[in-house]
Length: 236
Image 1: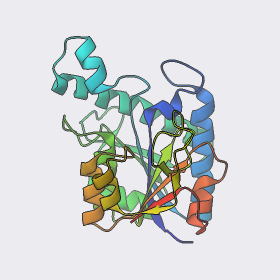
Image 2: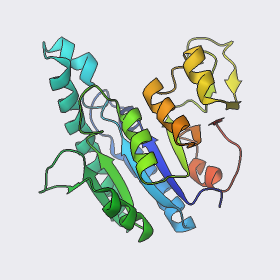
Image 3: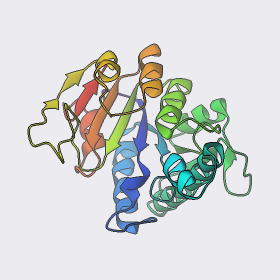
């Protein structure tokens, strides 16, 4: 197995399915099934899920006349809702799972404690990190890079919606966009490739955490990466 401990970053939009808003049962079950295969392989899996299917802080807060900090807090709550939905799907598949929240809400999630999270992973439990970093003005990409660094993840896997890697341009609008199989952290920052936030990229570079960008809809995508198969785009 190429990586023993990974952090999987899933966008909130991945949970939309065919809906315009909210959580669709089918993609949640599909993602849980892919995680289960990785756990059965022996990998330690941590997950960060976004909240864009319910509320996008910067975009929605402006529409509602909210300041960005307030909007970001609402977005963090959306990630908790998604985390609980994914936890429920994993539990139904008999995969032990814990949700840890960066914002205290003791009735529904554990508080984020680094050593406890690592202990859960060592015991074979999936850990879902919710509520981002717990601070406004930071995205869930940055939260994923931060948690990956804190738990000493060997790689960060970024699951994208219907895109099988990093391209020179948006492949949905530009048919001439070329897929990049291997790039560096600096390539993302220098060329303004919209894969993740520059803060998240810089954090992964600083802690030498490779990033694999892949299509979450591709069956056995996580398994293939764990088994060393070259899919998606490898960033290092």
